[in-house]
Length: 274
Length: 288
Image (cartoon, rainbow over all chains, first blue to last red; front, side):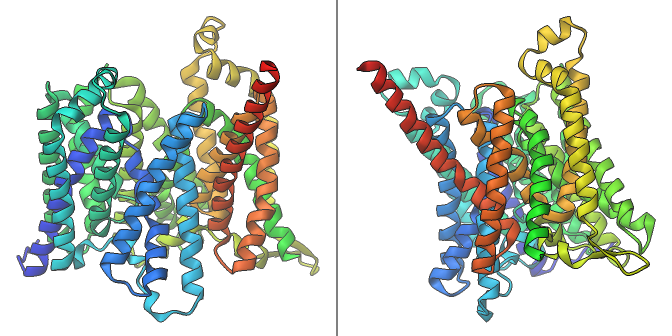
């Protein structure tokens, strides 16, 4: 096993680790709201947005793709809570519904773009399948800024989040609308997913939101330590996984990160035994 | 004729999926369908490896075993640990899928597997692969036959086991009193769901399996009053959505799997509107 610390390796490991911090934070919020799989929905739901971003701008500029992804990812979460309020359908089936609807629409649009003969489209699907080994400085900046935004948002609204998650009735009587906190949590989830999707691909990036809080959950007593520990674990998993995969050269980074996380969660799952 | 066979495939798939998925939806484990359809990947890769150049039945068996294994692991961890059940689903399917991709990369010289093909499916190619007898008679597309068998078996099992499954779903404690184990029956249901998703995703891809298993049942739940009525409504919605989605895909020259899943999903919105409007009119009558 030869490990060469080239500039490319640096961008890849750094990018993944930064993405892990944001994912850990978003994951801890979702875990406590029993919405762990909303990351899964968002990761699938960004596809139609990315396609529309491409169709409107006509180029593969990161800005238009990311903007489209944010809009459609956010819309999927909004639709879930809208339908949930207006029917007796349970959250789990609405998650499956939104995932299938948005991803189906995304595949449909993607094939339309591919059949349109626009040569600029080639490689558009790489955006969602991930390319950790080929991350550039721009990708690193994107990942860093999404994680930074999520850290800032959580620090700014820490008390509100804490009160809402553990006692939403209390925050209601305080005159704080639950809508605001929902928007906050959903926004953090969407931007973190957008940041991580380039490194891990859309199928595996949700795992980055699910695994850290599960590993952290047996060891924590307060909300603050939970969020911090989850962020640290997220970063650690990504760091270990990306170093391992780049060390073995032929192994793809995203899957190695997820398997590392899965193995590390076994002790916690044993501790969580009923 | 090609149109007919593609629509027939869709209808066979949606019938099997809806009959199984209705229970999953009512048991609040809809995302299990999504998890299973991703977790089958390592099974397929290993089956490709061991069976050599001739996949097919082996790949199906491998996928079914991996899917069953994943659903059993999810069931076990949700029962035995205090971790949130949805988080357990999220971890297990991602780890399975990741192992699948790692195996694909390691054995890339032996395994000719396309990630995208697994996800999107190839329903458009169903009519191309014909089953032709020795005397030259064209028996129609090959992939139709396993789906017909699957559909008949699913209908049979549905009517045979509707009693214990509905009991376990709606009143597990009463079922327990009667000696019907809810762990056993939910386990069997999950195992059967993985078999169905393996058969179906072979033709229609992983995304459509989720859409077919959950969305018809979700729409029907808005209107249904009893379990049987709900399932029947779900089937009718599904049968209507298949030709609609297919002709939209043909008209725009887009992906059939994508369009089917989009149309099914979009149908929930008018259904919700109709539900709201009829509810309001009923209330008005009462008020008058």
